[in-house]
Amino acid sequence: MSASARVRFRSATAEDVERAVPLMHSSGPPAFDYVFSLPGREGAQAFLRYAFVDGAGEFGWRNHRVGVLNGRVVAVGAGFGAETHWSFTLAAARQILGYYGLRHAAGVIARGLRVESVIPPPSGDMHYLAHLGVAPELRGQGIGRALIDHLVSEAGRLGRRRMVLDVATSNPRAEALYARYGFGVTGERTSALANAQGSVPGHRRMEWRAP
Image (cartoon, rainbow, N blue to C red):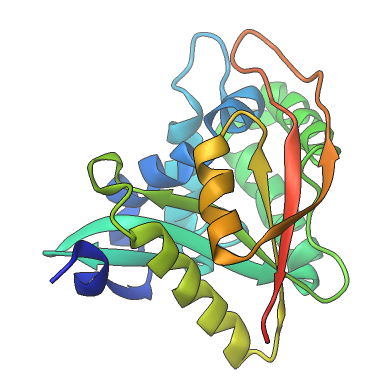
């Protein structure tokens, strides 16, 4: 039996943090590092662990599903709609302030808002797929497609048919996976965002409608 057939998906828990967060980070390291890394402090994954365990918002465990193989988390992803915008914004502001303190929080929030000009949040009837990550040693074995199948199925239970995601122009392998699934490019945003911690590439928005 293939690895993809043996993966079982479930809701994430706070205890998944050590396996799930590196996979989340792998979905877009330059953007995460640009926003959340600070000179002289732990990198972006330290903040993501803090937010994941907190549970709330876009980066919290409650927003994620994980794929488990042989008792180990090997995939992670999230799917959400436009109705989450304000609750996610408030949760992120609280988490950033709690983690970075007053001195650095404003800068982190400002960088996050700049990234939204390249990777905008969902709007309208979109069901947005985000933070899609598969363990490096298992890529190319169908687990990524199984993860998308699972998230699309979850969206279907909510009555949503319009699936949307963003992929970095520097990640053709991921774009090819989404294209094979049936996602088509609907637009591209260039990026000049960069600092000493990360350089955010341009991103293509891709969309697929359930039949």
